[in-house]
Length: 591
Image (tube, rainbow, N blue to C red; front, top):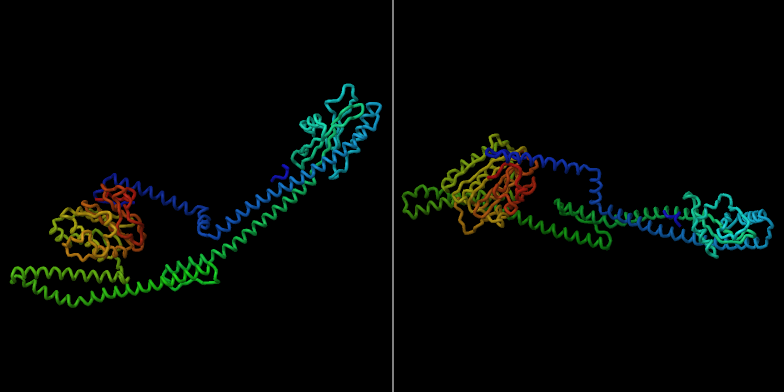
């Protein structure tokens, strides 16, 4: 039934093309940042974050949506079934009633003997009037229409129709079917133009005296069935909506019961990660969630115990290193004094004894350096290292370190070249620690530089200052880069230290850099040297972004060349230049 369907730092020798590239890169970066900010402030951003961050919301929403789809499908099916059943029943009743009425009309026509054409027309009108009126639904329309098959000379009888009906209401297809068949024909017809219920039209033929064969049609409106269908639709709609709401409420309650322990576990895990190792989950009942809470608590207790043992072991180790370093100071001082006496008097010794005195003094100096580095690294391990920042021109620090290592570089046959901008590169740094980092980097470059030139580059921008130390010596393999900052690590264990290093220099340099909130990165290639880049923010506590000095040298900027080494500092992303061309930065060209 159809009616019921419902930016780069400036180098002194930077080329103009590099500067233009830096400015273009800065403009592109600004556009990317602006686009990201617009996305963050978009109207659907908060809703999307809420959807992704709430398991309970997703469960309730999906359950409600599925319940709504099921209610629509079932409701539509049931409504169609009810409507079809009502229509079929009404058609059966209409056929039976029309058959009885047609038989009555035939009996009256057969029993009448009209003499004139007027009598025939009067008889037809009386019969139609008698057939009108109460029917199965208290309304039944009748039409008596002329048949195309009337015999020649038959009495002319005009078409007769009940009030509100006209011969045009009967479809031509139905009339052709009635004229060509001896049985009743039925068709659903919308006589209201879509404004009301359709009607069942039943037709058959009758023989009218003196006029011959005529078409008799009975019209049964489906108003009552339409009202019943509308009532069922309203009930289904209200019941379906109520059912969907109830399904949503039930889903919310069930999801809360299941998700709440998960939320408690997540909160407890976050507090455990924050250092509150005594946090535990509440255990209620003995179901699966209770077993999960018990297992979580057992895991947390095991972690707490293990972390406690590791902390105690770390404290003992730190105390041992510190105590040994302090205790060795006194005998070392005594031995050093004796060694100095022997060293000063070596001119009167035999050559072998004099050489032994020189070696003794050299190793005592190295031993003293090792003790100092052990004490310093123990302070870092104990978290006792403190930063004393002061505004400093990093260029001046670089020149002091270069002057300090000039004698060593001259003995090794290396030349140190410094490239720096004309404007000051001022930053809030601890001068003692930054000088120590630069001494370690420059000493490392002198030791492994194979008597080739060493290039020191100073670059700065609005947010950071970077110092690069580039040697052209033995270099490092990509697999060795991650271990450069490990304590006492050497790329070639058989290679002796020639500059008196303790093996802790780069590890201390990394800790000093982290203390400033900066980054210390390294690039290297076997046979082509290494490039260390120290980057620190210009202000203490300022987040550190991309380094103004590219890590990968200009001629090596290809995807396979840029390999970071050493952990990133706490205040910035990963190593700049670590991805080849994309990571090369927008600053001046590297050496």
